[in-house]
Length: 346
Image (cartoon, rainbow, N blue to C red; front, side):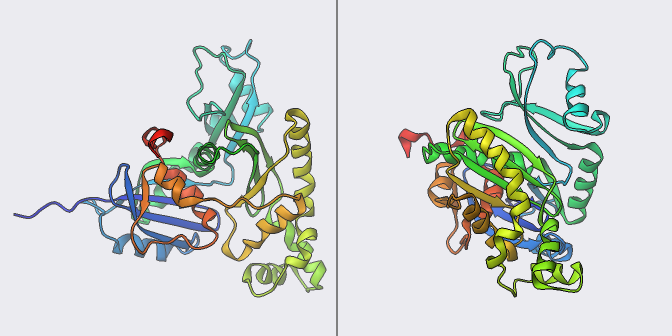
């Protein structure tokens, strides 16, 4: 008699630059993380080979996974509603068109509560603040097809940004933090910025400036002949750019300071730390540069105790490396806050 091969749990975070994967002891919490892997998101062959070669895929041959994705045209926006209009059929479509500048017919968007991430109650419609989360509907199909080609069956497909926000709000509660955190998802063409606390997401703002805007500055500062040369050098991790860091982040900083200033005036609270996620490994130094320019420290997460509170443990030999915070989004995807260990039992 042959025993059926026991399926494992899998979790995948596909960022613009890096793809992180975890093989878990089982599909549901409590988990033991048996393996962590990191690949360049462009290296599809290596990701596919790892999936094909890993055990615990079950009878289908696919790794059934919770997947977090970061499409460039994602929307994660906090918005103040006019409660008199909420029951009007066209009201939300008007917000998407007028405020977010997207065609509501071509987007899949869901309203959530910005404090706890729960579904916004459209029947009661008593809460003014809402967090709209969405992406182009066509992109959902494209992403699913791409995952299947790599041997990954998406049991759940989430916006990685939303999972990360939920994880960091939970972490702020776990640490009983009193100071707000500035979260920056810095991409090639744009940056998603958020201010959040233990009480939820307080401010969200997309900034149409990312790493690409830094390349002309590199070219000018180093006197290089063209932007392509500057780009190759910038991503190569062979040159120390920290001395010109202030000039590189100047444009992004200017945009951020207006949001931070507005928040501090509104709440009377100052930003306590900054966390930059989604950066390629060669540009991790940008976190310290951004923090230094803002005059706040880079957030350092006390990862293992937090994971334990979420019923997640690392198997012997599995380490996070530095900086540990780069795994925050992946662990946020696998976290189930309903199953978290209550404070009194820690």
